[in-house]
Image (cartoon, rainbow, N blue to C red; front, side, top):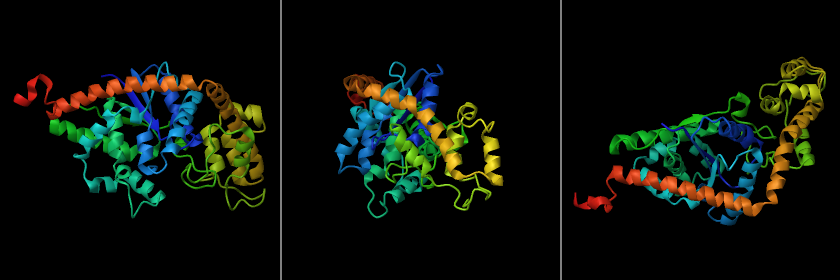
Length: 353
C-alpha cells in the first residue's frame, strides 16, 4: 500500500510558532524523509468559512499568507502538493455521503468540537457546517487515501472519528476507504505550545501568539512580556519550571548548540532548569536567552518568506497546479465511493442491472 500524507491548516490568519512546532516542522521532516509516495498539504478555506461565513474576505486574504508560511518553513512544491480545499468540490460530495454514517450525538461527544464550540461561544447557536467539520475532515483525509496525518494532539479525536467513518463505510459498502494514523510531534513539549499569556492554547483569536513572520523587535517584546512562575517574585526565590511557558518554549525550541552560542555558562537545559528551581536565577535572564533561541530559529523562515513575497504570481501558480492535481486524485476516490455505494447509475448501464 502507498504511504500518503494529508495535512493542512485553516486560513484565518498567519501561522504561528504553535503551528510550527506542532506540525509544520514535522511535515518538512516527513517530506524530506523519502518515505512517502505522495504528500498533500491543504489550505482549508471551506472549513474556515464554517465560522467565518460573514467574513469571506478574511479567509480569502489569508490563503496566500498561509501559503507563504508553508513555503518559508520548507514545504517544497516539487515534493508536496499544496492545494486549496474549495477548489476540490469532490470533497463536499464525499462529506455529504459520510454525514449519513455519523449521528448527532457522536458529533456532540467529540472533545475537539466541544472545546472549539465553547471557545467561539457557539453553545446556543452552532452553525451546522461548523458542527459537521469532523465529517468534512474525514472527507479530506479519505479523498487522498491518506495513511498518515501529521497533526497536533488536539486533532486526535478528529482522526479517531475519521477512522470510525472509514470502518462504517467499509462495513456497509465494501472495502473502499483507507484508515489513517496520526503522527504527533516527537518532542512532548511541542504537543501543545501554550500562549505567551500562559493560557493552555496559543490562538490567533486570543492574541497570545508569536507569528512565524514577526519582526525581531516584535518577537523580543512578546518573549520579554511572557507569563512565568507567578510565585518567582525575587531572583533568589526557587522557581517552578513545570507549566512555566518560558521553559515549555525552551523545551520546544532549544538545542545544545544554543548554549554554546548564547549562554556558555550552562552546558544544557537541565542545568539551567536546576539553577532556576533552586533559586538565584531571574526571569529576565532566562527570557533573554529564549529570545536569542527564538530569533535564531525564526530568522531563516522570515528571510525565505520575504523572498517568496516578491514572487506572488509564482505562489498562485503553485496553488493552481496543486489544486488541479488534488482534484484529479479526489475525483478518482469519489468514483470508487460511488461505485461501492452503487450510485454510479450511468456507468456501464448500472441502473438497468
